[in-house]
Picture (cartoon, rainbow, N blue to C red):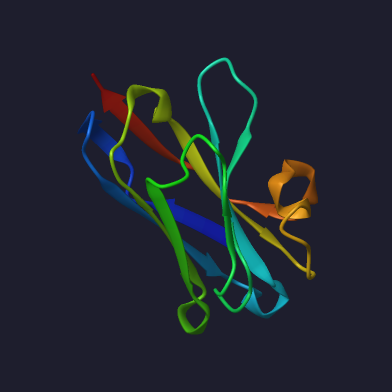
Length: 126
């Protein structure tokens, strides 16, 4: 399974970006995909997760109310709409995929995931 994240870039504080992540290859083995990020010098951290049906979402406290995650199972894609961006949102954003059902609590842990994309960088200038 290959994950391709895109949509990152340079944006001013207060601006918006929409990230996409596409799964290819043995996509039938992918149960769900979620978002993480890693800022320079920091550990990878959870950003957003969405249930298989799309009916439940969970967000990191730092992005709650500003980011919206969605998914399109037919296209094997997930999206992350990022609004009201802040300089502290600067990071490389990764999508990650898992082969089995997991709880939203498990979704917050990087070691839960089986596949990782290469990441797309987001830089928010002040």
